[in-house]
Length: 506
Image (cartoon, rainbow, N blue to C red; front, side):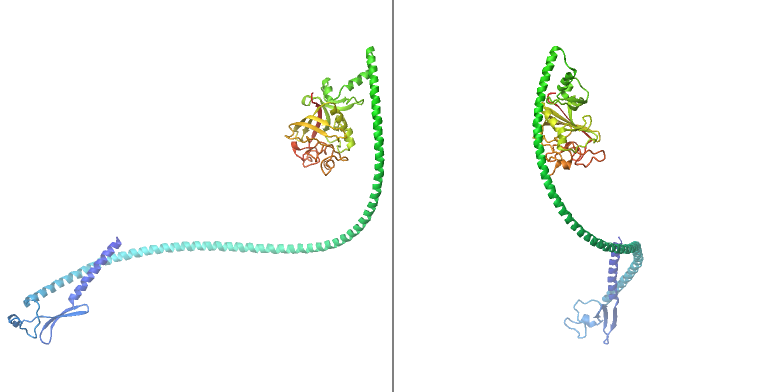
């Protein structure tokens, strides 16, 4: 709106200036007469001046003939007009021009007065707007200055903090450098001392090497003498084996004689029975001979677990065994038991052959007796395991048989089941028995020495129930303990184990 009013006033001023310019052109006029008495009128229009010669009152103008002209008279192109009429017309025009001039001056004054108020108001508004803008700019500049000042202050504080930290670090570095220098000096002294000790040790090593060479020479001589001694002992052992074979032959003769004697005694018993006389000792012998294993004892009516005597393959000597009459229906003959570590199972081949320990406690029945026992009829094997948390598990095999000593007491198994692992920790396809002095395993190393005890190791295998007995707290991470891999892993030593057999047709 303000711009529209300004444009309107500007156009009015331009129009007024044009009119005033026209009035000033009209006003710049003059009249006069030259030296000949002729009248003229001059009009100044800008930089140009126009001179008009006015007609004179000469009667010859009206009365003269056409074509006759005075040489000093003005040539008339227009029709002749009355001089007084022209003068009046000019005066009338001048009067009109004066009126126009007065009206223009009044209009100019009116416009100037109105424009002064509006211009003043516009200037005032412009000043206010500029002042407000300047104040806003100044306020923003002040706020920016304050923000920059605050940022500079923060930067200065950060610089001061960093400077103080760097100074502290430099002090710490200098202290650590001093400490390192002191340590370096100490280490240098220690290195020098070590050099001295090294030189002394080198001298001692040289002396020890000399002594070692001498001792090695002595040991070589002793080795040669020991080899000779071993050779002589081997010959003696060979002779002893020959004598043992002879004694075995004699023993077989004696056994045959014993059988003959038994037949004779049996005949006498039968004869006495016909006559109604049966000796008490003969009754006891007959009673003991009829029990081949714990299954026979169970069927005879003895259903309490304990130590009983059995007779294997009609041998004269009875064998004390522990019978388990409670587990899985009873009738089990125990061939191995571990429970407290009271018996050492790191034994020789001969000891494992004949058995060791007490049937009522920890024991091994004996490989020879197991061979004879499993040769009577088909047996099943049950192995019961207990860990140190009181958890129980078992593995059972439907067929268990042990080979003879010539067969290295080879183990034969069939059909595994039970809760002590989905797979069998015993070698199903069979393995030879090994001890610390007789190595029959399938490993370059000696499994019985490395894992301790006697067992069917195969290639050191996943089980060994005759290993070292470890107590609670020491039973983890033991490869040579009592282990059953598929129950508690390869390095967990169990708390208790029991191996027992029973006829397959029980």
